[in-house]
Amino acid sequence: MTRIRIPYHTSALEADLPSECQSVILTPSCHAATDARPPSIDEQRRRVGRALDQPIGSQPLETLATGRATATIITSDHTRPVPSRITLPLLLERLRRGNPAIDIRILVATGCHRATTPDEMCEKFGEEIVRRETFLMHDCTDTASLRQLARLPSGGELWLNRAALDTDLLVAEGFIEPHFFAGFSGGRKSVLPGIAGRATVLANHCAAFIADPRARAGSLDDNPIHRDMLFAARQARLAFILNVTINADKS
Image (tube, rainbow, N blue to C red; front, top):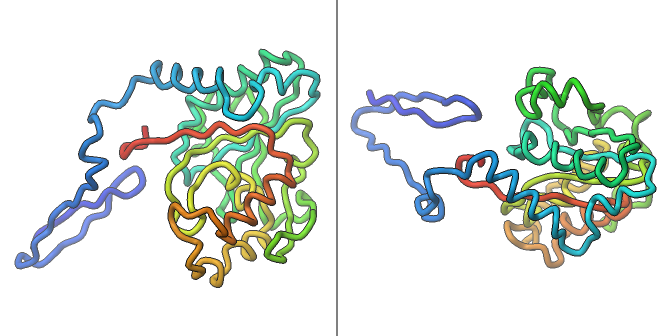
């Protein structure tokens, strides 16, 4: 028997194969060509900072924060490799630079996933920021924390978290990669499915839409899933997004 190890989350899965079976590792060419040494933490911070200095199609975050009493940052949960230890402190710093008195809440976009545990929170965001900042955990089944808005273009009900709707400035962070039915991840997905009610997520992620030939990786034109997501983000008045790209090592 031959034992193989398959990377899985933070550890690995093991499997025993008959000796006559040959096992090989196939590495995508884009990964093989990647520099094995990721940029340092300081360099990653500098790169994100430069992007925040020159946002695309938006005023700087500091300007958007001026005159706003409250802000909510939508952040990804434990299932997404967003480098929040780098990005989230920079977003907080920029908001407070523009408005030192602004009241900020951080909404964890769990979608239909389970709640992120305290240990996972500290692992993802760092103990200091978890202790210092106000975090809210989205619950797609808690109707008291949701509000119904206009119907989605597809006809489904649109329910979103009240904490995002009741804030003066809604900001999101995420990462972009090809998504097998939404076209690409990032951006509007922080709202739908991120902070949407269960009925809304199920309407958007229905079998008919996933089977639609326009709902494919890298495809946004006439993609019914993307169309609903974009509509939800506009209904939520999502004002600013920090998206990053990551390498094969999630750096």
